[in-house]
Image (cartoon, rainbow, N blue to C red; front, side, top):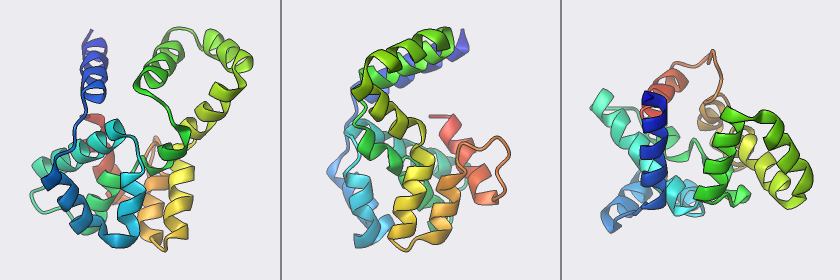
Length: 166
């Protein structure tokens, strides 16, 4: 039941997402002019999620490294090209949990959705590649493994702790 309540709360936070002017300024100060565009091209709900992960990270560690702050904001940077709505994401999470076979059928029947799903599903690798292209190699390494069951980097472990709470 706790998992279901978490998902309902997550849906609500995504559906009602807002980013304040002061938060946008904070993003610019953390990411700088090279990386900030990767954040601002994300859907509003993904921006909100990144900020929430950053706030959680700061509660866990009042003085996180710049790398961790950037990872909190950009760990989902690869989702930008998926153009997955809150409904798309919710449907995918629900079908993946309840009926992977039905999800597979939807993906076969809806090629456009399947292409967007593929980007969404591989967002860690997509985001890491975009970060490497921007010259952020250390950050790319953290983002690349942020869904790994056994990450090799301490920064990724700390990011996962904050991400799981959001």
